[in-house]
Amino acid sequence: MLTFVFGAPIVIVDTMGGTMTDFIIMQVVNIAGFIVTANLSVPIAERFGTENVISLGTTLAAISALALLAYGITGGMNTSMLPVLFTPMAIGFGLRGPTGFYRGIVASGSNSARGSALIVFFIFTMTARSVR
Image 1 (cartoon, rainbow, N blue to C red):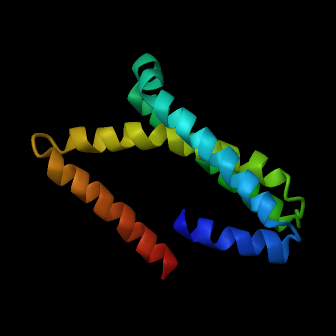
Image 2 (cartoon, rainbow, N blue to C red):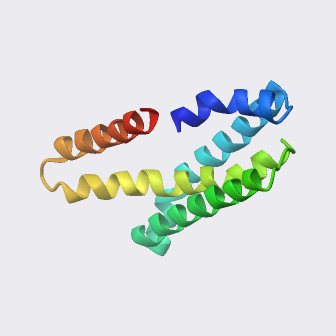
């Protein structure tokens, strides 16, 4: 995510011929989608089940990633499509983030502090590996 956030303005402005306003609109739409769904993820998980919500969030993020890949491969240059294509990813992350983190802490049993620390460690490890 950090790689994307740092690289997206360059891609949007230099490669796609967009503006920083296009980047800002995309970010605001996606952050809003993430915040709303992250706050709703617990009641949704209580109603439909934690595993179902994690699966739905993962599926939405994957569909969004594939749509973005297809858009890029086909030469898509319309920056107004970016919020549309990225929003399912933000919603997916919002759905699966809190519930997935919670499941990780529950899986650690009585040592929830260690479980939480390991989750954060692995998040940063994956980020560091992707930047390398």
